[in-house]
Length: 223
Image (tube, rainbow, N blue to C red):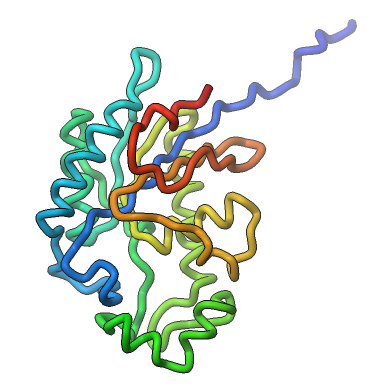
């Protein structure tokens, strides 16, 4: 007996839309590498940025498509950014260690001006895939961690929309991976405080929808 041509075919799962939000501005933004140091909170400007991005993210919601979850790295500045987003969506913030900032090891808290004077700075800029922070993480490990985390969110929320509040470098390397760009070129990606970056994660791979959006969220809705 002949089988129907559609039998045996697995129905494709709709892509999961992950909206990556960088945390808002802090007193150290652009001045030092705070890394995973605890106790760093949003500045007044950062708090306002968080409220603004919450309004923009809420614009993603439609009658047919709701945001299913809001995740954040465990650091204070990301949880404080995620809080108004979750409130606007009627959700709770879920903490995920995979969204953490890079572990800068012995460089944690260093002034950027001092970091730029170190001999290793040229390697960080030109060959980050071959660099590990003393006592900390390598860029390759950080990229593997965030990519694995996003894939886990995809399998947890198939075909849904999720918000993940993280940090600049993890978001930048996630974009590089999704674009098929070598890790050594990730520094070319700009991710501003409280900007939104959208990646659709599907069975056939990722699609970068937009990067570093700081205005209307309606451009993030797939057509």
